Image 1 (spheres, one colour):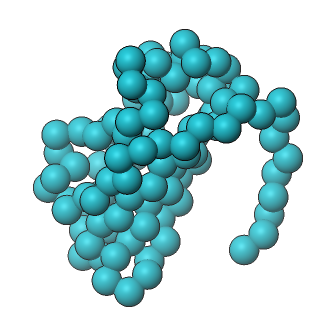
Image 2 (tube, one colour):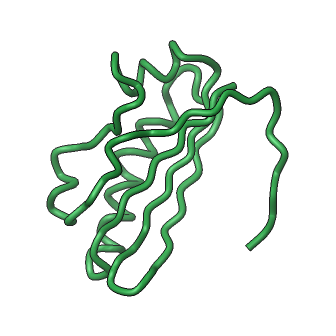
Length: 106
């Protein structure tokens, strides 16, 4: 299993609209892709920005490439992202895992 982790920020005034856009476009797309094992999204406010965190779990690299294309370490962005002032980390982190241990910290 491979964990794919991405981070971005949006101005605080765009947070709610971006969360809805993200749910409707990104998360809904990822959830139905073959090889996707789960997707988790969190938005955290810090000062004037909302930090957006996305973690998705995949069976293998072929599954990730179905979503991310031939450059799986580059962030996938969407044309409407700019409407919300998204600043996207360009690099996505991947970690190969043999099992997931839930952590319920703060």
